[in-house]
Amino acid sequence: LSRQFEQGRETGAVRSHAAAYARVHGLMSCEKLFDLSDEPQKLKDTYGPTQFAEQVMMARRMVEAGVPFVRVSRAWWDSHGQNFETHQELVPELDRVLAALIDDLKQRGMLDDVLVVTMGEFGRTPRINGSLGRDHFATAWSASLHGCGVKGGAAFGKTDAKGEKVTEGEIGA
Image (cartoon, rainbow, N blue to C red; front, side, top):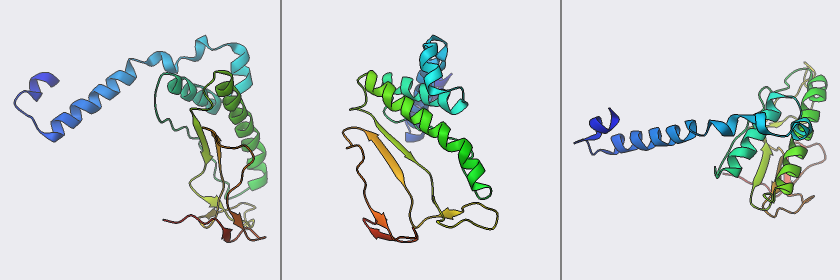
């Protein structure tokens, strides 16, 4: 039906729709990328038993298959309240999954060709709020970069002693 519709309609919108459909069809035909049943149990155990761990393993498989950009989100990272309790759950999971991914990419010889970026959409206030949490803070925040020749342990930028203002290396729009 699509090919029949396209006949005589050589517009940008029709070509764009056809290209988008081809990409979606191609992705749908790669369902094996999303089936982790053939991954070794030892590797699954290394990543951990969480949905986030599975999504990161799928992302690695997609990169192996040639997908140039993959985004994985860890839902519910906000800690506007109960910051300390929340992070006792979230941080160990992130550490475990990120370490597993970096080791996995390195063992597969892919780490020099893949850039892993870990960041949020905002930084967090340097002070704890009345709900024992931390709110959005667009003034300064952290990101980590791994792979693609990024030197481990390197740091860029600094804030003042209270973490309230960027004092070196500010990047703006």
